[in-house]
Length: 151
Image 1: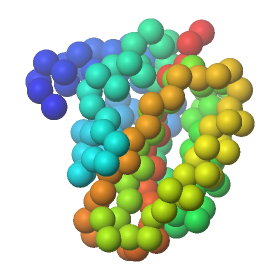
Image 2 (image 1 turned 180 degrees about the vertical axis):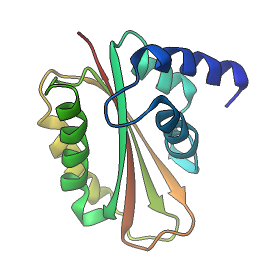
Image 3 (image 1 turned 90 degrees about the vertical axis):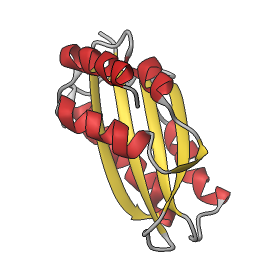
């Protein structure tokens, strides 16, 4: 990520970050989670900016587990962030899934993601991506989630 992009994101996070993750933690997730890895479905800084611009609050979390538990992991991460913001409904979500390069992740595992996202109130804007990552166990998945809230 270029310094200009990083500075623009930091400026927005100064005003909006809080809750579970600090602005530094969110920036680390952006650089090493959302836009890292060998992307199958890419996330870039423009996706990050689209998620956070115009929001009054931004927060993020990550979760790791088995790909068969994708629904529960994603639901828990969304619930934790929403609870830290008074139970507000998300206005925007950015999600990146890290999957093992040589793993057993199948598109069928995405059913859990679809089910979870269908249950979110308020019809938020959602951007998601998938990245292949070395060094993960065959059945593992890691989720990076950023949520924007409007007043």
